[in-house]
Length: 293
Image (cartoon, rainbow, N blue to C red):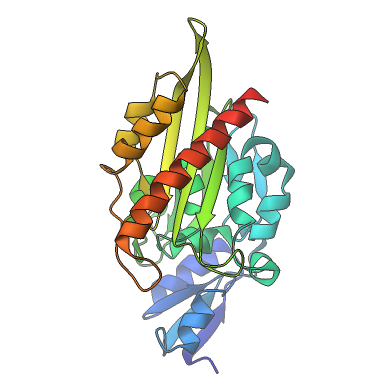
C-alpha cells in the first residue's frame, strides 16, 4: 500500500505549477520508479502527490534549426536509447540510459526523475554533465535556465523551489558536435543494480605536429562525491596533451585531486579509489578510440 494524503493528476505544465503552488508538502510523481518505492518504505508517507506523468508536452526528444537538442523530462530511458537524435548526436547518453535497472525500469523511469532526485548514483547524470546540459525549470515566476552542474545542491537536494518542475534539458550543438564518449558503470551485478561508481568521458582529439592530442575533454564521476562531479583538475591536465601511456598514467594520479569517494556497505573508499582510476582510463581510452573510427 502507498501512504499518500492526496493524489492530483495535472493535465498541463501550467496546471502542474498551479497544483504544486497550492498543495502543501507536495511530491512530484513522474515514472514512479523512485517515488513510489520511497512512499512504500515510509520515507514519503503522508505526502500530497502531484502526478505529471499524463502531460504529453513533457515527452520526447527534438532538435531545432540551430542544433540545440531538447530532452523533455518524461522521456523514459528506453526512448532515450531508441531516439535517432540521441543515437546520432548524444550516443553516450544512450549508453548510460541503457544501463539503468532492467527493461521494466527503463520503460517507466524518466530522464527528468533521474536528475531531479539529486542522487549521485543516477546513471544519466554524468553524461548530462559532460554534455553541459542546461536544465529548463518552469514555476510560478516563469521559466529559468540552470546549468546542470549548478542544479545539485547536496546529496538528494536540487535547486527546485516551491511550485517548480523540470520541463526540459537543453544541449547545444557546440557541446556535442565532434565529440565521442563512453560511460562505465561499476556495480555489484551487471543488471538491476545501482552504481557503486560510474564515469563518463567525452573527448575531441586533434592532430598536431604528427601526434594525436586531446583538443577538449570532459569527465564526470558518479558516487565519487555527494553529487555527480565534473573532474576539473583532470580535464585541465589532459587538455592539449599527446595521447600515450604516460597520459593515462598521469590521469590516475591527477584524478585523486578531484574525487572524494566514501566508505559504505557497498564498497570501501579504498576500493572505490582504485576502481575510479581504472574506469577513468578505460572510459577515456574508449572515447578516444571512437574518435579514430
